[in-house]
Structures are given as structure tokens and as C-alpha cells.
Length: 344
Image (cartoon, rainbow, N blue to C red; front, side, top):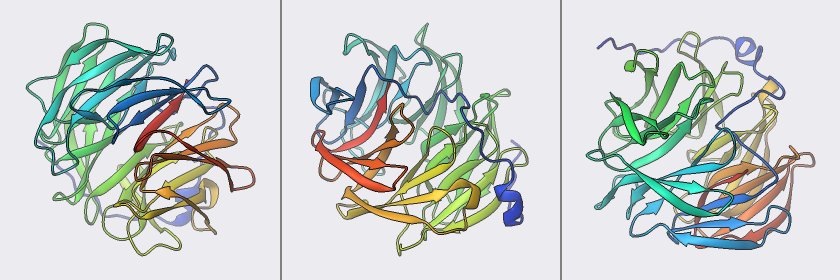
């Protein structure tokens, strides 16, 4: 297999050029006004909330294994939720081997996708046609799944213990973050269905996300508080941006609906979390820093484009941020420990 290790850095001017595309469709950054789904990892529940009142409407248990992530179908009718297992990364003695299929209108499970013999499905993405891309960290594989047939189409070796994955909006490439042990991001050609290279990242990578226009991929470096900026056209690392006000590495990140704002959370391990707010058009500019709950691990964006939710795994709360004023508007209880959520 061809392997490339890229160490070249380009100027900050190139990093900032042509990054923001307003209103670009992105199946992996969904929103909507019909509902709000929360993945309560620690409680082993999936919960549904009223998006306006922020009150819980219904819930169902995920069973013995916990869920950590989800993807929403392009028509906003179905959620796909991998069952990771009863542990955490690098300590998951009973890994899961299935993906739940959830009817969002009915708020219930309508089926499962069996991915055996592959173990510990974690990060999940979806493309505009509804095809699923799921990374299994124990198996070191990226699965391409057709949810219509509930069959695995391809099994791609990513070599590292991939925990998260970012798929470009045109589904041409995927970038798999190997959280520890492998100090690189795996680059996958989804057309050829094979790994084609690596990008060096000290300490591996944590959260990873593609921009809605497909021109950038952003990742959190596993060692030191740095944001890694990647050009998917050349598979080069363009820059590393220091997270202001942090001594430790961040954890996860998301781009706002309009692509102008990047939110990064930190503070895993039960610590109080901080949210760094970066202007994508000026990544080396001043960063706003807000406090959230404990061990923040994810984000969701309301359809108004001004409201962001921060999911706090350490205390089960959800912090509501006003993106315009860059202030905390509210906090509500969402379960035992929330890692992922989405409006639909």
C-alpha cells in the first residue's frame, strides 16, 4: 500500500483563503426544527428533547453497550447510532458489533445493522446519498455500509486504532484520527476504498471534522493544545494553531452551520471544560473562551444559526451558547453523561 507522511507547512495566508462557504449543504452537520436527539453515553440511553422548551419527551435504553456517536440521514428521518461497548477508548472489554436504526418521528429503534466480526464501532459519518462510514477502533477498520440493505460494502484497513472519522462532503476521502499509539491521521481514498497515506500528529489525534465546502479538515492534536489545519486537495498540514488559555490538549470540535465559527472543547477526565471559539477567517486571531460543564465532548447547532449546544459527558448537562454574543445563555440537564446530539 502506498504510504505518504506529510510534514510540509504553508503560510497562514493560504490557510485562511477560501475557507468559508455560506449555506453549504453538509450531511454531517445537520439541523432542523422537528426535534433534538441526545446520546447519553454514561446513562446508556438515547433521549429525545423538545428543541424549544429543552424538556425531555421520551427515551430508550441502548442495552449493555453504550453509544457515543450518531449520524442523521439526509432527509432527517433516521438516526444511525453505533453501539461501542461497555467501556471507553483503550479499555473496552465487551465491544459492540451493531448499529441501531432509529425512526426519528416515532422516536424508537426500528432495526439494527450487524457489523460482526468487526468490533467497537465509534465514529460515524454519512454522505449525501445516505451511505454510512463507521470506524472501529479495536478492529482498526473503516467500514462502508449501505443502510438500505444493512450490508457492509467495504472494509478498509486504516492501520491505527481510529476513533473518529471525517468524510469530505463529496465522499471522495475520509480522514481517520488515531487517538493514541499511532502518531498520525490515516488518509483514505473512498473511491478506491483504500488507505493512501498518513499525516503526522504528535500524540495522535482526537476530534476531527471537515468543512462544509470540503476545502479544509480540522483536527485536535493529541499532545499539546493545538488545532491541526489540513488541506485535503494536497493532503498537507497547513498550520497548527495554539488553543489560547490551555495547557492540555483539546478534545472535540465542530464548525458552525455557516462555516464561519469553529468551536473546540476541552477538559475531559471529569474536569471543568472550556470552549474556545475561533473565527475561521482569522484562525490566528483572538479566541473567545467560555466555561461549560464537566468533560465536554460534543456540539449541536440549532437551525437559527446562532444557538450551539455543548454536550457535557462529565455531569450530564447541556450548555447553551449564543454564538452572536459569545455567551452562555442557559444550562439544562440532559441525562447522566451526554457525548453527542443533533437537531433534526
